[in-house]
Length: 275
Image 1 (cartoon, rainbow, N blue to C red):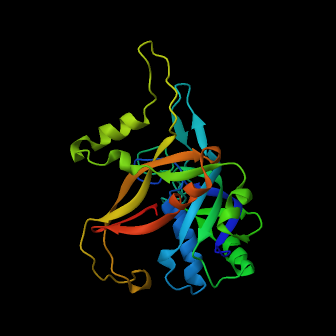
Image 2 (image 1 turned 135 degrees about the vertical axis):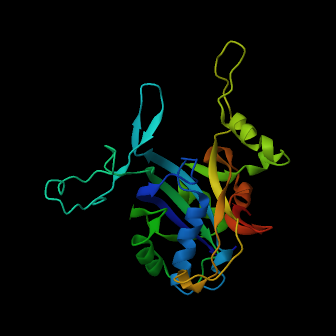
């Protein structure tokens, strides 16, 4: 095979959105990584940018927040500024939301993350241009701080360029065929730590995490004033699936072909999955 694969090692991102859906805090979704690469491709004038696929190798994630004594995680939040602007001199220095002491806390969950990307199908962009555009890009709202040397490699050389880590694999098929009214319960059972009859934790070989993997429109597309690029606008709900982190040590070279993420359409839904 020709050198059709681009490896960008150890991309370090600060302050990325860890809330992939309104009820899930689990880190940036593969949809965010695909969006990052597609945005760079569009800026560079690449045709058929939606056909680009990526493999994601997770190295590290640090959630911004703290754990309580009961093990609950509390994400760090921003404080809103200038929520009130009273003309009354006695009240002018107060900047609290009415009737509260929150000072306008903004619900958010952020993280710092390090991952390696392997890109297939990004042609017509030089390494220098890719590095330049990547250095001023964002992932899930987070700022890209640094990354290793961009390299173009053959398929057989990918393994030697990525180091240790965990590949992201779509395991949403584990929920296939489950009735809609049982879907949440089944999802939670998959994620819950298994215990034996004595209450001891049973080792689970699968490291499963819920993540948003697409969107389903809930309104008909319409044209709205100020819509980005004058594209049709529709309201949508996130579609949450299951991601498995698979250690590189458990993956054979031929398995790589099934670990590249790409866009696809299922009915009216737009989703990302392993191609």
